[in-house]
Length: 488
Ligand code: BG6
Image (cartoon, rainbow, N blue to C red):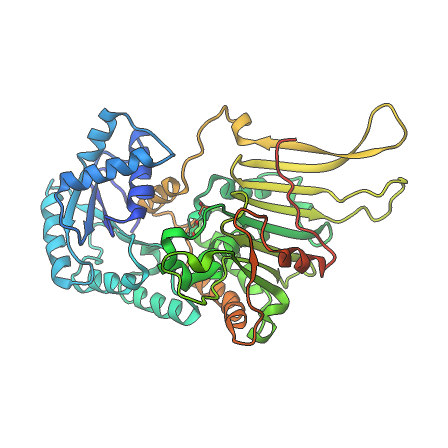
């Protein structure tokens, strides 16, 4: 059901409303949408959590989060108007009785006479996804009659293939796939969508986007923040589950997919699934051949990290995509915490010219797509230095969002994704089969490196560029990590 008629209203129900995600991302993004006039006049927000508080106390706590958020600043009047749409209902999502109470509260809030659509947002601990979905089912709250019912599920979606399959089965016992929006906020980033535009709205890049011209692809997601207060979750997940299974693999699919015939959600996602399906599978026994892992020095002293934990906070890997377009082109992925910079970059290294007629040895062309920060693109090519012999030097063609769009702020990914979920557009959400393919790729790597006889994670200093093992890993293939981007 996709209709959003003016005869209908919409309620966004946030489960886990007292949590960090609600305060830091969901409410600031919804408030921004409101200020931009993109949240229909009939959209209201109802938070549910176990904390005992009044609606006003709830709004006040959200206002504090808004002050701390770096992405916007509504003025007081706008906030007051937006906040008047926010309601609160105390309750435990795993209690059927509490959900019945919520249903009653919703009915009285929605009693404008117009039917109400509902977007249920599970901003919950992953262990509560199952109980929440089942209770939405058993209380009849997922049933679509004249209005739609949708559910947004946060990551991590499962912790391995088996648990993801189980969760998909459970979700599908209550919701049809077109009601389910599994979020990966990397897909909501402006620059990731721009990659689709860059590849499929320009004729000049696509012909060379193949093994015939590309030597290798490097995807880097570096963060400066250590694990700090999130050890309870993070130590269970480690960097493979926290970043690779979702964000990095999603970036890989957008780089490697074939052009869909149109932007319709399922056509786009079919192409992404095909890429994941073509990623070469390995066995746990060979995990150490295609991946390395590391842990920052001091990780074991973080509060909540169990003694002797081997959870990696950094990893690098090589994946091969076995299809006509990519055969023989390695995709190198790396990500880590507590590093010297926050940077998400995709680097395409082209092949060298087949024959060099110049005396000087030159590097290959490089295209760098900066996902964040200082969003943009760089294309490096050779130029002759003026007034001299035939001397060559690499120069850059650059595009920066900031310069080209007059400093217009780049919205938070959640803003786009919330709007898409409200509009029923699932293009930038992960489908059940996509999630399962991604776990199938990641499981043997995680298992292999966690095995008792696997190499222990190497160390790296906080604020460094990561472990030496990552450089050695690429040197094995005769390559280097490229850090291309930066104002030239
Ligand atoms: C989250 C991870 O999904 O993404 C975090 O759980 C990580 O550990 C975050 O810090 C990174 O997101 P962004 O948008 O800041 O790159």
